[in-house]
Image (cartoon, rainbow, N blue to C red; front, side, top):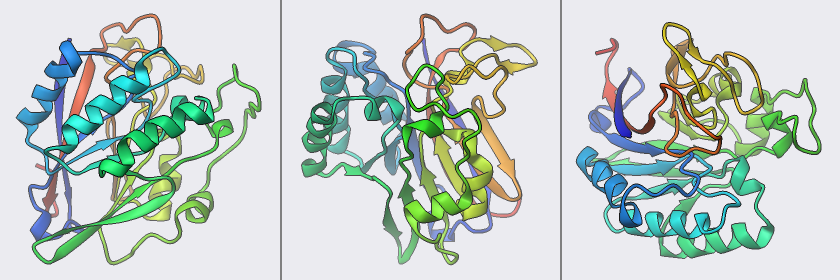
Amino acid sequence: MLRTVRYNIVSPRVPAEFDGFTIAHLSDLHGELYGQKNCILEKKIHEINPDIVVMTGDMADTKDGSVFTAANLCLKLLKRYPLYYVQGNHEQAMTPAEWMWLRESIRPSGVMVLENQRQTIFRKGAFLRIYGLVMDMPYYKDPKRDGYVKDIHFSAEDVRQALGEADEDAFNILLCHNPLYFPSYRDWGADLTLAGHIHGGIIRIPGVGGLLSPDLTLFPKYDGGHFEEEGRQMVVSRGLGNHFLFRVMNPAELVAVTLKAGEEKR
């Protein structure tokens, strides 16, 4: 089952020219197929009719064929939409040759693979900034991997070291895989963070939320959905695929985010 979940992001920092600007947000596909050559997923994206498509990591992993699935989807979507891609921890876990093959299969065609880089999107004389953040593997706090450090933290200064200063005069969208450090993204200057990684907490408990994160934390705070802190917002996709053995009460999802210029949520 694949559902589409929609969010309105209302902020006085959204330029009026970007009111109604819609983003299709994909994350954590893990090489999954929805119909032949992902035709079902592609159709659902077309139904959103986005202005851009963003992919926030783990679209592919080390499973056989997943890099081909991710590359094919990127190239098909690119025929209709600008597309921005950031790595997740599973792309980082690939061999250098596997990641280079995926990146060089899509980037020359126009997919903007953002590796601690910034792009500007223009519309009707206005603009917004979009950043892609890649962090080193220890920051995912995976106790199963070499280099695990329990109390490691990714600070706003770490974001600044990776991306430079946020543009105070622009609405800043941050693409990253790991939502754990939302306070740091917020303090750095991200108006909207789009992330994934948590798979909705794997098992959803009604009235409580997700049970478990990939780093084996119980009841992760940023398990999926919309979050707002100090006027900054984040949307966490619960993911399209399944790296674990199962998902319980936790359907795969495609996310649609629409920007709204204004003061109040609606």
